[in-house]
Image 1 (cartoon, rainbow, N blue to C red):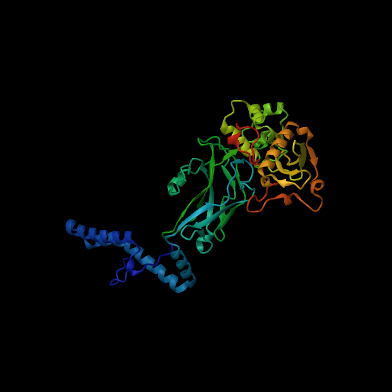
Image 2: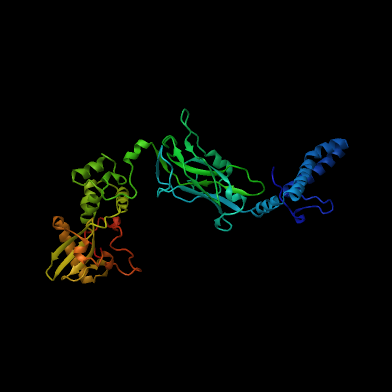
Length: 435
């Protein structure tokens, strides 16, 4: 039974008749119907009985609303509170939203999860307060999870209609199982719902965009003027589960095979060229990028585009480095002895002069940086002379590498941070000051 909405007399009610007119559209209908009835009576000579028959549906609706209002007031006091909550929510702009970002690639047969491996969450968001709607009857709605064409929402429009959303919902291919299986109906609690067990059964290669999106829409209709916009996720590719054996790792580890990097296909041209030069792991790849980036690019082929090169390097630099693997190198310059401390991919992180304490490279003076650049050039030409070093052998049991860190407001984690090499400057000379 649809709950009536209380309206004040200022909304168009006629105090003389004691009738509460529901809304402007209904007022227009009443006026036009009564006017039409008079016209019909005057022009067509219709009987009063005929006029009453024409007005009967409208009169029945009014009577039903007043009866329901009276019943709720007399026998269900708690329903009045519910009515007030719904009334208070009228006119709000409510939206379903996916909170967690989905990975760019999902495999059939596996549970749909967020990028970090956590369940995907949906929230009911109130844009008027810029908060999640955590209370009231709308905060416990039932939501349906559907599959959308990846093209839907590509223009970043947020004012789609319900019909446009529904028209983009995808069904399974003929002769296939349902495209999405599992717990497709999610009941929200305090404005939050969780997708725990949703699985794709088919890949996305058969549609033009070759991508899917997840969508979420409310199951039950909401009375009154409350509207809730559907949620859509980012677009993603769905591949058959057998392709998972060849998927890229985000982030990659140092021990990953080099074809786990973006744009390097297993047994493809890049993979074969790297393998022929003994570059088999991500660590090997990053070490060559640190010591001789030009040689690495030439190894991939002179025709490699900047875009492809940037994609490979950016993915490789997200690799989590081994904090327990460090190397030292001693350079005997014309002026003084320089000792370098390098991380697991041979990136210089600290230096010592004349046997003094190690200092982060960022804290060195300009003249000291010149000496370090000479030392690095020599070290990279003689990587076989780098000495694998135990942390305590350098600093002793009471001192750790974190003692080398600069102040927190400059570089929060110099030694443990991932390397930052500018791909845009890869055509510049191999050694640059301020490394």
